[in-house]
Length: 91
Image 1 (tube, helix red, strand yellow):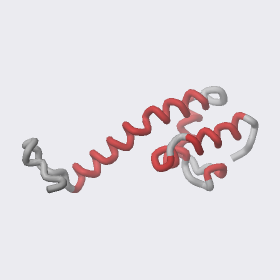
Image 2 (cartoon, rainbow, N blue to C red; image 1 turned 135 degrees about the vertical axis):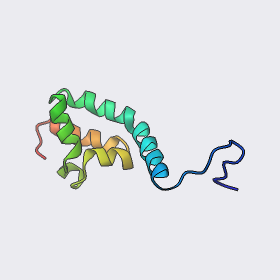
Image 3 (cartoon, rainbow, N blue to C red; image 1 turned 60 degrees about the vertical axis):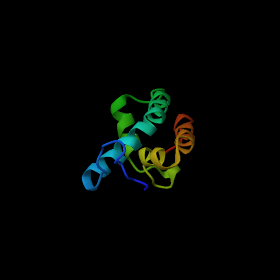
């Protein structure tokens, strides 16, 4: 049966435990992309400004936050938005 953990001796995860595991998996999967984005943005700003940029709506991403786009769609669109910033574009 799918989701049956009896062979490993583990209980299936539900509720908060399952949600926490899901968040951990997403965070780990985008960690590399975040590092690449931060490295590119350091050409422009310091870490506190990068944190704001990552978590603020961005017009080049149709109003989405870069951190959300990274999690849902990968790094390519975010890097394109950074290229606009580097070229002197406005948000």
